[in-house]
Amino acid sequence: MKNLEKINLVKLKLNIGLSTAKELIDKFSDVDLAIESWEKQIEDEQKASLNQKYDSLEKFYYFENEYCYPTLSDSDKGEIKAFANNYCSQIWDKYISESQKHLMLINNPDQWKIKNEIKKEYNWQNDWNETNTEAFNENVKSLIDWEEDDEVMFFWNKYSGIESKWGIICKYWISFLYDDESNIIINPKNKKVIILSTNGNLSIAERD
Image 1 (cartoon, helix red, strand yellow):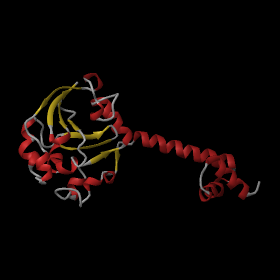
Image 2 (image 1 turned 30 degrees about the horizontal axis):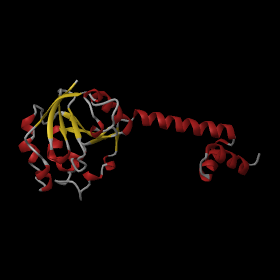
Image 3 (image 1 turned 180 degrees about the horizontal axis):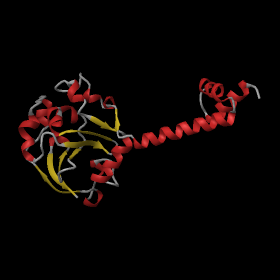
Image 4 (image 1 turned 90 degrees about the vertical axis):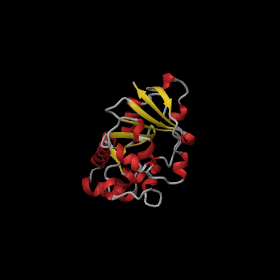
């Protein structure tokens, strides 16, 4: 079989580009070996993706300079770790809900692992509109007994979340609430959770 025929056969069987198929044949010469190698590579990449914990922070545009208030420093940026989708899903299932992918879809207590929700008087909406960067330090920190350096998890939904220090979230809270359709903050070391709902509502609750 001529190389061109091998390349076209590999291209057809694997549904890949011509140049990629040519690289495989140039490397392995044999069609079966080329296909086996490619399929093994894809399998390994999929396994690595499933085990991946963090992703690039660039997936969340609200931490870019034109949106972030205050401007995110390089040192603080390293403290904000975006969860990879699959890992984020696992953590959401563990701490929040196994049946619903967003807080706004939860309609009864059996659908999530949060209880004893108490709405607080403080409303963050005006402070967000006025870009009051100190609002969480002044109004929210005192509502919960978390330490500045506690590693906490902020979720927008089942597949979007980050891990950071509580102090970092308080500092950049405006950017974290750029998408404010109900968010939740979990502290693995503490049963208390913070729920940030639409229209600036804030509640303290407990997880199971």
